[in-house]
Structures are given as C-alpha cells and as structure tokens.
Image 1 (tube, rainbow, N blue to C red):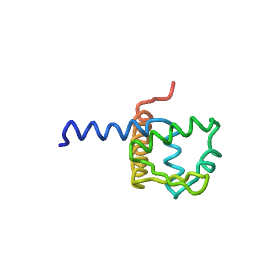
Image 2: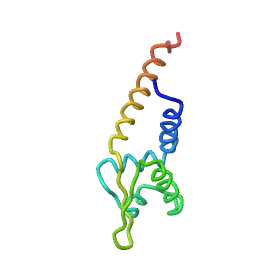
Image 3: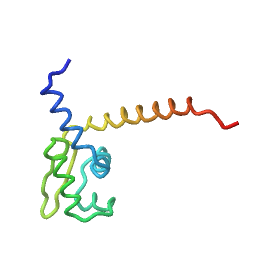
Length: 107
C-alpha cells in the first residue's frame, strides 16, 4: 500500500496530464524529440497557450527541454509515461464492452 504522500505525488503527475493538449503533446513526443515549432503544427492555439501547457508538463517532470539557437526542443523525461495511455485505453474499451452488454435492442 502506498502512503498518502505518495498518492498525492502520483495525483499531481496525473493532474498534469489531464488536458487534451497535454495528452497530445505527450503522444507527439513518444517517438522522440520535437521542436516547439513542430509541436505548434498540430494545434490551433496560440503560442503562449501551448507554452503554458508544456510548462505544466515540465513542472510535473514529464517533459524536459533544451535550447538550440533560437529553437526549444522538448522530449519525454521518462518515456514509459506513455504506457499509462495503454492502460487508459484498456479501461475505455472495457467500459464500452460493459455498456454494450447491457443495451438491449428495442423490440
């Protein structure tokens, strides 16, 4: 069993991922480093908004960055964070399966 403090720390990491843009950033970085410009291509949001989302991921220890000239590059600090997505997908599929078994066709 984990301690309450450990649960709080885990909760903070999960909260940091709990936004569609941040989940997408993590997914985009799973195959390797990307520049800020490359990440911007995937979103219809302004630069400051994307920057704030990346900052949340950095504070949580999910994403790190490096500067090369004028460009910032980002990568996953701990790539296994994407394993969490597989588990979430399994939960979603199971939930759908459970709901489908309970739905009966109209007679």
